[in-house]
Amino acid sequence: AKGQLKSSLVDLSTAKGVTQAGSALSRAWERNQLQRVRHEDDPEQYMDSEVTLYEQIKALAAVSADPRQLYPPLMAGEAQSRSIPQILLQLVSQHENTDITTAIWSVWAEWLDSSLLLPEESDNNDEEL
Image (cartoon, rainbow, N blue to C red; front, top):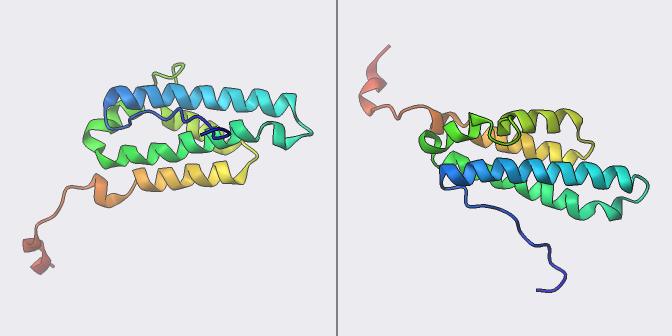
């Protein structure tokens, strides 16, 4: 539809998709940085790049759907020799928009959900002291 932002989100159900998401995240951040510098006094001018960056970050939560398969490429560092977590760490420490930083914390919380990371325990362990 006319006037809507074109989504550049990739399929995060494959290792290749995670790698592509890292590159897309890096490009979105670079574009946002450029727009913020160019239009420092007019936030409306860089709002589209801010929304795109936010969407790229929020989409990364999908990686937690298959941690065994998708965490290795997440950590690999294909995007300009930095891993996605490294990019997010830089973003959370440098970006001025609290919506962006809050989205990053939300994604990290999703990735680090212990129920996704630990093997399921059997009910037989309930009686152990």
